[in-house]
Length: 126
Length: 433
Image (cartoon, rainbow over all chains, first blue to last red; front, side, top):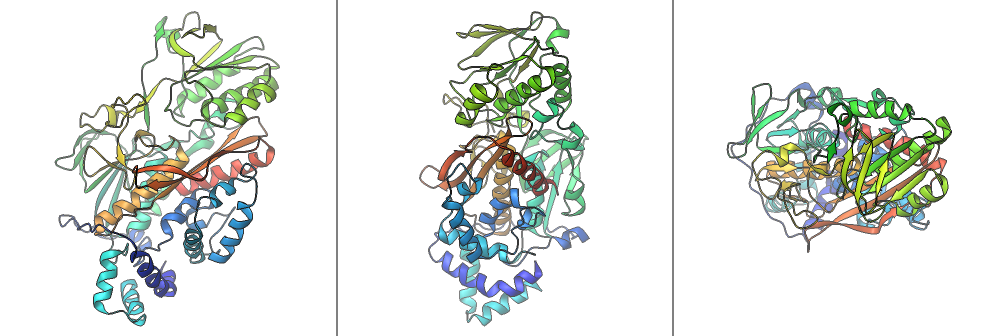
């Protein structure tokens, strides 16, 4: 995750500015009563990135069949980029819906969403 | 380290401090991470996924405890194949070891005995109490009583096997004891019930087993609903062609009585049926944590607009619409999404991400998506599938099918069967490992 942050933060910032410009947001104030737990070694391994990738929530829909962060040994998609994913989805969209389960998924996401998903997986360990 | 890099990069992009503050205020950036205590109750597909992703995405400030009385989760998915001897129950067992060692989830072997939402506290069966900033309940389903009669010993033979475990192996033994002259009766409750294709799948694999192993035997499906609830084309073909002469499908069969002494099922309007084995799946409701806790969680409108069986939730966060700071996931919630393990996993990720935002002062995603995908064996070597992707619809504030909508495979084949094995392996790994 550290590596991901270093290499892609600038892109995140641009994407975030682009996506937030058209979002009407509700600001939720943090709960002041909560206290920070002391981090264990396991906690340090799961330390978060500074920014949430804007494609993460969409990409998480792929994890069930392709592994957490796309890293399943079979059907691995970690490392795939936006253009490769667009190409794959275009092929799968062209198939008969009942012949390939991925057709259903390829038809469900917009071009912009597929770019975000592809960008997310491009930053996962291949 | 990470935050400094983030700031430097923003600086390099030419942003002023004011602009940076604006980014923080109006985006899902969570530079400080989430702080707080989250208690997750129920280690099934929904609860386990929620606990894992709360820790994976939430960072070191998030204290996550999973409360689950059983040391092993037995998967409902693939449990129909235990009935036919194609899988053993132990092969469907999953532990919480990785949740603890890899993600730092605290796992407490207990059940919840009471909840105090005002004090933000739950009391456990081991006598301890846990305080929470957010509580996630994923208790699954429970059952309404069946209209049973007969001796207590005979009534005990009427199994549902709809929560994988001891009943699964007991029903397997009953099926194994059948002869080629016997009938297996499966009763399907009114919707909503867990795993819409599941009962039809069970009828198919039992029919396949009777044909292969017993060289005879019949299957009768008594469906309380007015038609096949999932994959209607595939299951119609399975009943009429693949398992022709073995499976009899009876819709609109509302069960009025089950006499366990004579092994007779009576229905309103569809007649009476006798069987060697009666596999009665009772009418569902949300787990007791929702329906019997006395804190008003079971407020979702039911099929006839009558509340009281499932938890109403905001599908942006899965927070209860009745009790603040309490989230309800998976089969126990009343949403437009099906009750099934694969989509419970997807709901849990939406819930985990939302809780992290809520505890870190960020913004909850207003455009969540989920998906349901399910492979179903039709014979020992063939399977079909069903898939649908949901998006949030702001006008109805519900999840609605998008893209191609609810889609079933063009028939059942061996390629789907092979894909099914990979799907199961990866889904369970995404949840438990």
